[in-house]
Amino acid sequence: AARRGVHIVADNAGVVKDVAVEGLYIHDVNGTNKRKDNGGIIFRTNGNKTPSRFEGLTIARNLIWKVDRSAIAGVSYHAMRTRWNPSLRVVIRDNHVEDIGGDGIVPWATDGALVEHNIAKGCNKRSQTYNAGIWPWSTDNTLMRLNRASFTRTTMDGQGFDSDYNSRNTIIEYNLSHDNEGGFLLICTPGKRNQAENLGNQGTIARYNISRNDRTRTFHAGGAAERTQVYGNAIYIGPGLDVQLVLIADWSGWPKGLEFRDNLFHSEGTARYGHEISRAKDGTYGLGPGWGPAEGVVFSGNSYEGNHVDKPEDKAPSKAPKALKESDWNWPGPQLDPAKPEKFASYIKAHRAWMVRLMERQHGVKLK
Image (cartoon, rainbow, N blue to C red; front, side):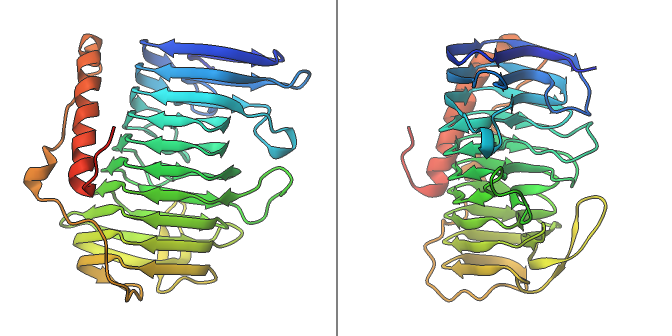
């Protein structure tokens, strides 16, 4: 059965203003893994009679542990473009979600959502289907920054982060992704679609992130995403890992305009590059050299350290970040036992500071 810790619903209510869901401990929600709209905190807009949305929704400082299927997720009648009525001023901040059946944090039908300083650990543990850590769907102008996604399970997606379809201008910056079975970042949209309802994936920017020991594939560009920029990221592939660092794949279409510039690709294992030539039932891909039918794939000014197979042509001088020394990391940073919620407030404060310091060290910037 569908079960939810908190269910926030704007049901044919017009504009619902200034809702806050803060400081909760939500755990052991035994929902169904067959539906995304249940689990920890679900926010829903239904406007089949009166178009409805939130203007001001804050989900902050919540500890969510052992819930199925989604930790924090939106659902909306207004997600497709023929009914588009996005919620505004949505902020998802300072939450820790752990041991999640499916997705971690997924805003739907929003414009200008801010997703920052969240930790998603151990997502996609039980659903046995496609899920990821932190990702928007059917959104415009989402900013995801200073989040940490780790130990996402399986290769059915299984990435820490995702820029998904029916979305424009998603920015993914200063995030930390590590030890995710499916990789760091998925960027996807089907090529064949009803374009009145689904405008695809346009203008994704992934910049200044860190990926450490993500498995299977680091960057997975699936389908007909357009105008994607990936720059200034620091990618670390650990000893013994064999990873498709860039995988370009078919989803009834191929990417158009995909630029990788000034990234650090630091491989102590094996890093591979290429396009899909086969796909298995577990969501993994066979890789062939080159970019297949994809158009406008450009590599410029990246730094390639260690072992790289079918390395792309890249002649520009590099402005990529420099590799951190092990002493720079202070790894693995602050940790939380989710069975001890009384430690949550001090943990979130310490984790915020640790993340900012790590990003400042890696990228040589000063962050607020």
